[in-house]
Image (cartoon, rainbow, N blue to C red; front, side):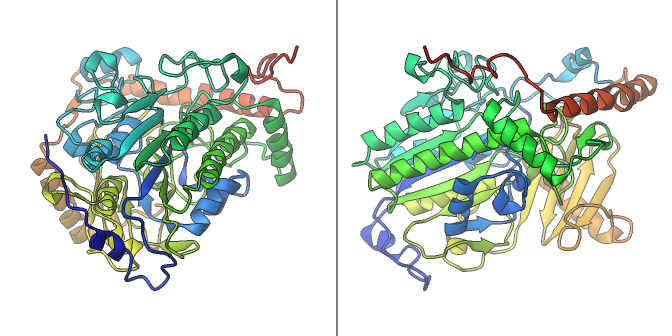
Length: 532
């Protein structure tokens, strides 16, 4: 196991951010950390990042008074790999959790009727205990640590629960990747979350917020890390009748288009943000975030608690519930394009007076690890991680230019293809493992990735591709293999069914959900509670 040494000193604490002329107050010796992760929340799923449909006033306020990293990226377009990176500071090729835990691999993949050219590689189905996590490192300098919500990095069977990786308390985290045991309204039937009779009908997001607030209140005289990982807005999406009605009416006022989906390369993709259930689910998360922030204020903790907010991957434009659209970004969750990996990425430091500073430098989910530890006074061996501390950027300084890497040797449930990607100095190269072709995009001019310039700039494409392949080799990356039983005819039939069967079915379901008389069931997934 890697070793981390405390090197905190009063001089370090007082000097942190001192070079920034906007500093309003001296930094506390050991600040608290509230780390908020929303599941499947796309970059464009917040009004602060451009949405005109979703309403997120509490999250917007956090972004507007903190530092908004507008080119913040998850390390993967799907959840488990990204979550492992958030906790360890390593890219996916390094920690090797390359797909969502539970995804079929090898010949098992064929049983799911995918008819793909490649068989995805096996990978660790849990977070290895040899990797030091943020809570483990913080405990070396006296922090208390708390986890609430989605874990999806293993379970009891692998001895890979949150409490096996440095968290003192776990509320709701186990092997499941979604709210499958009980849904988004109490009772939740979660083995690590107590259902209380008086909470019947409460949203899961608010329940997790209440548990987090209780921990904060009970530990207000200690240094702590509170890690709040919402299950929302992952499928199956659910909301109350009141919120559905609000956003159904809003969608109508904004203009409901006749066709709601268009074909991407493989699957249909939602064309517009007009899903009223998803909008209501996002608002429930926003209310829960506001509740925890209010607790910090009430307990006098708002002046010495750093708040971090992000998502584990892009919004679901295809697959799952086909919930959202990424606006100017291409694709969404599971895709190799910007919609799959670009995410909300905010850091609020109360004693800085930035009031919505915008940072355009590309940053990664792996960077939270060294950033938090530097602020907390824990020495980090940079040779052991891939992330870089963002303290220079938080100080208003420059960071050395670097490459960011992604490695996803799998097929996404949402339409993504096995690929590895490098982004460097505004250029993004995608290497596809089916046939070793590449795509090259200039993100400075083409954020929507509409113009592949790999032929026009073939020398640059070759250079970036070689750099990417060399890096993967140095990390002993896992790769897919050719499937000797692959049938092009079977694949063509499957793709045809997506166009001719799936898309019409989605159009029908969308039309029904936007009808004034639509009702999912009698009690709206349990949100309606008998008041007798």
